[in-house]
Structures are given as structure tokens and as C-alpha cells.
Image (cartoon, rainbow, N blue to C red; front, side):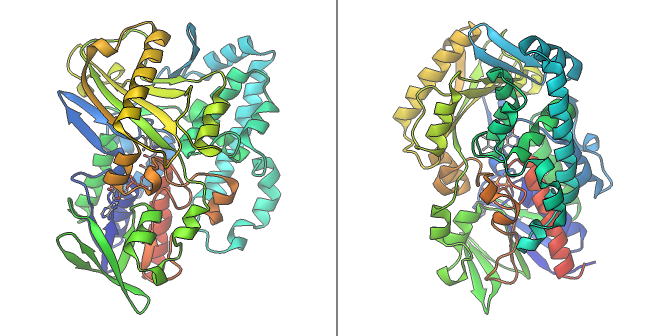
Amino acid sequence: MSSGEVIIIGSGFSGLATAALCAKQGFHVVVVEKNDQPGGRASVWKEGGFTFDMGPSWYLMPDVFERYFAEFGKKPEDLMNLVRLDPSYRVFFGEGDTMDIHADLNKNLANFDKMEENGAEKMKKYLESARYQYDIAMNEFIYKDYQHLTDFFNRKLVMEGAKLHMFDKLDHYAQRFFQNPKIRKILEYNIVFLGGTPYNTPALYALMSHVDFNLGVWYPIGGMGKLVEAFYKLGESHGVEYRFNEEVKKIEIEKKRAKKVVTNSDTYEADIFVVNADYAYAETQLLDKKHQTHPQKYWEGKSIAPSALLFFLGLNKRLDNLIHHNLYFHPDWEKHFDTIFKKPAWPDEPSYYVSCPSKTDDSVAPKDGENIFILVPVAPGLDDNPKIREIYYEKILGHLENLIKESIKDSVVVKRSFAHNDFSQLYNAYKGTALGFAHTLRQTAIFRPRHKSKKVQNLYYTGHYTHPGIGVPMVVISSQILSKVIGSEYNA
Ligand SMILES: Cc1cc2nc3c(=O)[nH]c(=O)nc-3n(C[C@H](O)[C@H](O)[C@H](O)COP(=O)(O)OP(=O)(O)OC[C@H]3O[C@@H](n4cnc5c(N)ncnc54)[C@H](O)[C@@H]3O)c2cc1C
């Protein structure tokens, strides 16, 4: 067992997951969080009888949570009521043009066969390769800390690299299998979850189709907040202490070692310091220049992942034509991607996502009401103001009403918008990013900011900027990688 004090700055999923793992190793852990609740990007907002998940809504890669909770001798089902969604989600290509993706793969294969000659056979091949990519990635690359280039560019990668399609782009790769642009969209959309586009993300991430079609889309009854609660309570049961409404203002360094953090109301000394807050913000705002491994200039040259314009809406009626997860893909979605990555601007004709968890879960809306969350991916760093949000509210709601042939606006009883300014204010997000650090090839694995500071010996980072990256499963893995590093360096 280890001993010593660990301070964790931030109680996002990765902060909570790291806290529980460090406490299990014997450390005394204090988590300091600026907001009034745990979860970070996965905060929960309750209003008028509605419970809104403010961030993640897709519980994907269930194997990752099984592996994490197994470290504590538990199964996810011991901690939450998890259900597999069926259909997994509905895609709207336009008015009257929809497709449901089912939990039963055979149903999906039959649909692909109708959309393209030999569609089922092609899809089987695509998924075989995606499963292979997933297995190799999970067993060889993802649960691994990268310190040196040789850790990444090793014999295995050279041997497997071609089969993993590491150096191809996802869209190009999908085109090798399918002509039908609708099928390609279904195989590519989830790259937005990783903060990228099919045009700038390595084809390795075709593995997300294995996640989508084979591992399935899950949901914890009560919402993603129940998953936050599971991590929070796990830490608590191992002695983790939480301090809410305390914002760290400074990490003080002496002789290349962090000594203490200063918050708006206290100071904490510790042996080990873990930053879960956004990496870019923490390096540039909490550390003096000489202690920054990645100063402002570094971030300016990087591809920052999208922000999002969100609407949380409570309706006083039920809707017939939405299911739990709904995606609208504009026929020319590339233009929207260009406004995110190439020429940052508010998109003219956006694709968007609508979550309606009240279709599965009575607890998140009053009786006969509907809980709706709309997400439009947008470039980070845009001018965000009430006027533009209102323009998009009218635009998206109008479009959605047409799409599902039901009125919505006249039934809205709870409404909140959320965008760049909120991401910055609530989470200290650099450029108001929702997702952190994009997954381009140059920002994958060894090329992501490291878990360990190069300048300060006992300062570490966890969460979506670090390897393996964006998404709840990924930041949980980040915590497992980091706690192993800490365990080995501090003699667990
Ligand atoms: C709208 C949206 C939808 C998403 N959808 C999905 C999805 O469906 N599925 C999925 O898997 N992923 C999804 N994601 C991504 C996923 O939510 C994130 O990758 C993940 O939650 C990030 O966790 P984290 O612990 O790295 O960081 P965060 O959640 O950002 O946690 C960092 C914490 O640090 C705190 N903090 C910041 N500064 C300070 C300070 N100075 N002092 C103290 N505390 C501080 C913040 O308040 C925050 O609580 C979504 C994200 C968003 C925003």
C-alpha cells in the first residue's frame, strides 16, 4: 500500500475515477471542484420536474466500465440500472427519410443490403475489420502510457499499422467499402464524438463502428448522472474527500515540485497533484510560465475539438416521432464540418443531434412531458451571444418540427441554452471547447499532452486532453493509466 496526500483538481469523470483508484492504493485523496456538483462536463441540471444530462448521453463501450469497476470487485449492474437501447438510434436524412439502427445486427445487415448491392456482405467485412482494430487497440495501444516515441512507434505498430489503417483517413477508408453516402454517414458520424471529422481522423477510428453495432448503446436509468454518482460513491467508500465550490487559483511550485494549491477559500498541501481541469487552462492559468510544459503558443498551434450549442428543453406533451437518440445528417454535411475545422463560423445548414431520454426513462420528465436535449457541433472560439443562440433556436426547432412533422415550440415549458461562454465559465474550457483536444493523427497517443508534467516532478494530468482522449470511456481509461503511473512512482 502507498501512503501520502493526493490532491485532484476537478471532479469530472476522470478526476473521480482517478480519485477512487488512488484511494484504493492507500493514498489519502482530496478532490477540489470549482462547481457545486461532481461530473464536470457530465453535470446534471434539474428544473420544473425535468432532469437534464448536460453533457454525455451515450453510454458506449460497456466493456471499459466493466473493466474499471472490476478493479473494485464490482460490476456496473451493481451500481446502476443499465439498459441496452433498441433501436440504438434513429437517423434522419431528410423529411420522410429515416433509418433506425437496431441492437440486432441482422436487422441492420438486411437494411444495408437494401441500400447497396452486397451491402450486408460489405458491412460484415467492415465490422470484422472494426472488431480487429478495436481488439488490437484495446490490448496493445489504449491502456498504455506513452513517454517516448519508441513506446508508440514500436515493432507491433509497424507490423499492425497497415491493418489498423492508422495512416488512412476514415472517409477515404469507408469509401473503399461503400458507395452509398448514407451508409458512409452512419459509419462516420460517431467521429464527432471524438472531436474530429471523417476527413481529418485516422481510419483506425473505424473501430467506433464495432462499438456502435456490436457492443451497443446503453443507458443508465436516471441518466448519465447515475454513472457520475457511481464513481463518486465508489471514491467515498474508499475514503476520498470532496470539496465543492472551491476553485483552484494557483499551483505553487518549489524546486520543481508542486507544494500546494491555493483555492478561493483555502490552501492544500500534498505529495502528488493531479489536474483533471482542462489541460490548456491549467498549464497557462494555474502555473507560472517557467513551470509550463505547454505554454500558450503550444495550444495556439493545436486542433481544438468542437464546442457545442446545446438546448435543454422540457415539453408539456409527448412526441410521437422521436426515439431516445436521434441524429439529423444534412445531405451536404461536409460544409458544416468545414465551418468547425477549416473556416471557423456558425454553420448555415447544420447537422444536429436530439436526445429524448424520457422515451426510455420516466424519471427524467414529469408525467406526459418530454425531456429534450439538442446538440449542434460548432467551432471552438466563436462569438457566442444571446442573439445568435436565439437565431439558432428558431432555426433548429423550425427544422426539427418539419422533420418530425410535430409542433414543439408551443409546448416548451423549460428552456436553457448552453454554448462557448458557458463551457468557459462553468468548466474553464479553453476557447469554450466542449470536447477538449481533437483526435487528428498528430494528436493521437504519444502526440497528446502527457499524463506527467515535464517541468514539475509531482504534477500529473488526467482526462480528455491526455491519451487515449475524448469521451467518458476514454477519460476513465486515462485515470487507469495515470493511477498505475502514480502507483509505480510512489511505491504502491
Ligand atoms: C455536450 C457534450 C456531449 C457529450 N456526449 C458524450 C457522449 O454521449 N458519450 C461520451 O462518452 N462522451 C461524451 N462527451 C464527452 C465527455 O463528456 C467528456 O470527454 C468527459 O466527460 C470529460 O471528462 P474529464 O474528466 O476529462 O473533464 P471534465 O468533465 O471537463 O472535468 C473537469 C473538471 O474540472 C473542474 N475544474 C476546472 N477548473 C477548475 C479549477 N480551477 N478548480 C477546481 N476545479 C476545476 C471542472 O469544473 C470540471 O468539473 C460529451 C461532452 C459534451 C460536452
